[in-house]
Amino acid sequence: MTLGQEWSKQETIVAFNLYCKIHFGQYDKNNEKVIALAEIIGRTSSAVALKLCNFTRLYPYTKNAA
Image (cartoon, rainbow, N blue to C red; front, top):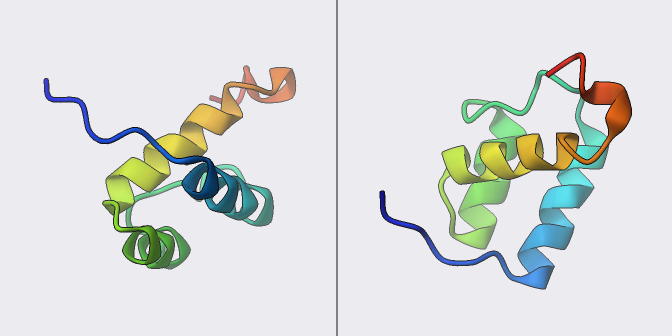
């Protein structure tokens, strides 16, 4: 498996901003907001969706939902 480019601080911040604005279960590569962010930051929508899911792992209240 090839690892991609590391996420910059700015990319992480804008991804977290989106994470705070959409509901759990909407972190999908086909979500129009995920696609739009991916285009803006030059990443795939799959990469953005995975990043959003990774943020979920930081919060104990979502452990049972994931």
